[in-house]
Length: 148
Image (cartoon, rainbow, N blue to C red; front, side, top):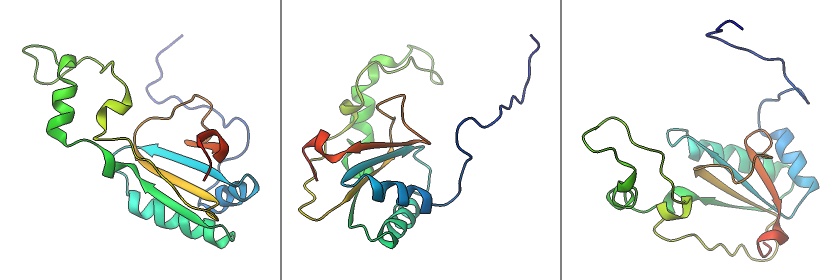
């Protein structure tokens, strides 16, 4: 097998789609639900939340958003908590942090959305909790987490 510096693979499953309309329509079918979307810290999270929120409201859904970034511990505290991953004498590389994602928060958010909220959108940098996350989006019935 030879090295391919730019590998590509055919699309498997359904064809990719652009925009938030298809996702909003899918969520309208499984409400109430929690949608968790994660990605790089540098992404335009406010724009994402606004555009997804607009698409969900266009489906007639009531929503609430939770920006997970507001709950992270201050950077100096994250550095302290992850110091064991540092390699002595190497300023550029560290070992993979073996702790949990929860250790990076000042406190874990507790969200009460009230009656009538059909979709809770949680967004920000992080990692998916399962390998079954579809298209970078994890959908869970609200009843798994105590309801909306």
